[in-house]
Length: 160
Image (cartoon, rainbow, N blue to C red; front, side, top):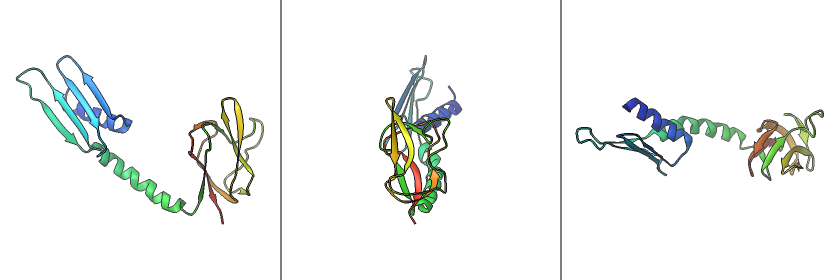
């Protein structure tokens, strides 16, 4: 295994979010750990006396995540004036009451408290999600028929 392959493996593990990966081949052992300080450490051990033991610390995760972190921060400032409507349950998000019906709300739709915004299917039960605020839909954050998690943002609403 050459250095380029090891570097690609480090990048892959950093992007995957795994905390530790161990790889053992004939004469090579590699352990990649990502810690809370976002530093990736590689330990390569070769049992042969002539081959060197390589220990390398590479700040792969901070470099890769820094540009991504600045983009959401900028958009988060723009979205701070909006109210986020979040999913109250885990399930599948639907924008329509049934496939042949129109969507509940579109971007630009004015809503008031109690209006149905979407349906989330959980365990074969369809739960209508009602608005708790009045305003205008600015953005739909989830695609139709997508799985959603508890507390996942669904809509952005401009309360003004």
